[in-house]
Image: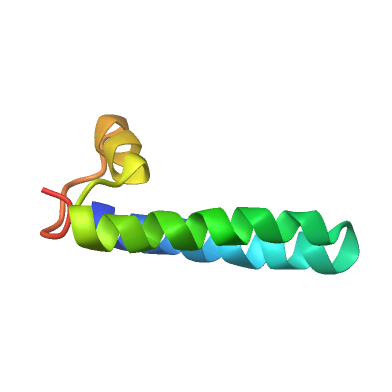
Length: 67
């Protein structure tokens, strides 16, 4: 798995978890969904993704999007 796929998997998991928490616990969890979406949008334009930096340090091999 490359960093690119790991970032997408992590973002998707966070969206699903926060949507479930918003449905069953509190609608305030939708703020996490908004944060993940905003972070993905800024990463698309700037190429900077904090999750990619962490995953690179963990040892996941780099892909082509977050070089």
